[in-house]
Length: 305
Image 1: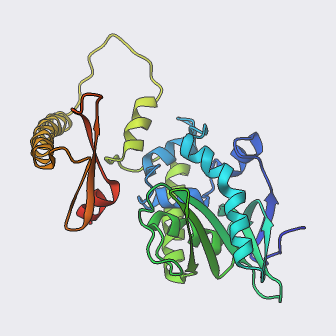
Image 2 (image 1 turned 90 degrees about the horizontal axis):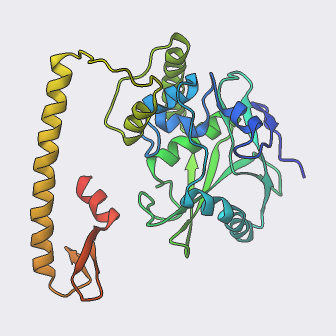
């Protein structure tokens, strides 16, 4: 069964992830729903700098799935089935890559398209898996991680739709649903940022460097080879590097001191909490001594908020 049509966009096709057609539909002077969170600096996986280099082709994007991505793909149809069972009034359609009719550079590949059996406007279904459920709030609301919100808003804006459903399986057993409504102001902001980013791609002007891990990985992979020469860089860059090294050493020392204090306070306990929040888990060797102290991600994020 073909997915429902939308007057705002056209379906380019359903491409196998990683295939040449899939790569072509996502590369070059266009912005996908996955790209847009990186463009506005909210993606945990890409930075504006790393995405820019992928777009201009100086560094090839790593399309090999990691374990989390691989299992997410395997579980996608299972989660889609769970959503369909919970919503017999909606017909769940497989879909592909869509291109906005007025803005051909704007593309999106939602996981599913939903059509009400009684007629009416289609909606989008985005499917996620999460280890700890970080960033997901009360089920039934729009409280999804901000980078996923960017993604589904871009999908809605591309297809000209009003509603996105987000189905997520947390820790392999906690199934939840969320609803994100189209927001014209947010969508306009994302488009403005995307247009500015594409202008930088066209002019050959990369975004500023930042502290994102993807920025550093991209800088490492930039082509250039090795020449037996000594490069002169500005004293300001060199001083910033020296200061960062010193800050890092001090931070490592402070982390070791704090970890030692935690272990001393924990005694033989495997886990510890503070203020009702799980803070960390201790892994041990066969003799009961500590191998490592693993902080709980939700506590770290709550402390940083």
